[in-house]
Length: 469
Image (cartoon, rainbow, N blue to C red; front, side, top):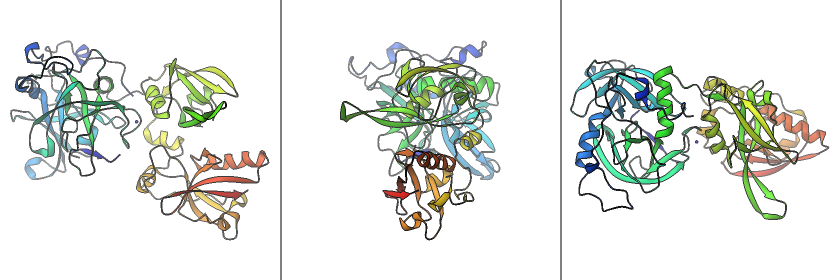
């Protein structure tokens, strides 16, 4: 609960500073221009940023999550970081910092302690908002608004690494638009080399004028300690989510109802040249995409006039939309380009979305197998998310689990075994057992007598197997 360490893809209703929601707020802290650091392309760095830290550290807090009792009783505790965004004591942190807690405490930089309650959480973006239980007025900071951030901009990270107490580090923005594996589809992260360790999760990443440009959330590390690669949720994403959590208690995301996948398409005039496109791999029955007329294998070229080149980018764009919003999709189908307007519905609970996508929840044990499919002799089951993670399947890869292989069948003679994963049929990904059955039926209807399977073997390698059907 102290932090997320990743060994490695929503936002709210726009960039709405929370001050607009609380008319009685005091003015957010501002840092005098004389204390700010010049841009890397400007004058030399100042000798110290101590005065800057002295100001913003007053709004940076330690978040303590307590399970089964109180801290005084020696209950299990997790510690992370956070920052105050309103005079009445609203605190932003990471969801994973408070996940599983029964009660929460906020520790200020000067040692004051307060009880806190959860206002709202969003597991999809790993954000949460707490309310300090006090009538005291609090000094707070605001999210950045201004010109787009750039690689090389100076940043200041403040947090509670390893629970040792408030610590500060300075660095730069190392990269923008990072996809941190295992982090979900709705965030393109900011990467920084400012030192971030376990316990910094949920803490602010400031610019040199004291505005929050990101929420520190994860590190890439083979050792568990900082190796100079930290990931933070950018301010424009975080602010929208926080606004929804404060005003509604949840995030009202739009629901598209289609599974997307990145594909490579080779140019007819040059077989050595290819580019990536986004294709529709599956449709939720009765979902907005299906109702609007989108079809499996449609290639999505633009979303609201903005080009997309991979499924992660497309998912993030859709994730920024709201329920009831009509989104324009330019798609390529049967050598023709057409525009399909899709009115998004309200996104169901995550478990239902997973079910619609053919993902089976559970402890990682596959569900009961289907009957062998025709004369292939394979008994297959859908994969749970936990099971996929446990065997190390790459993010975005789909497949079905081979539970049984009937003796004497084509599958058995070709060497297929229980425990293998079927990944593709004739270069088409297999996202579920129902899709497997559909692809087999299409192949037979087209007169095919053999299919080419891409298979993940028992040792984790991937091979191709020709299977008679």
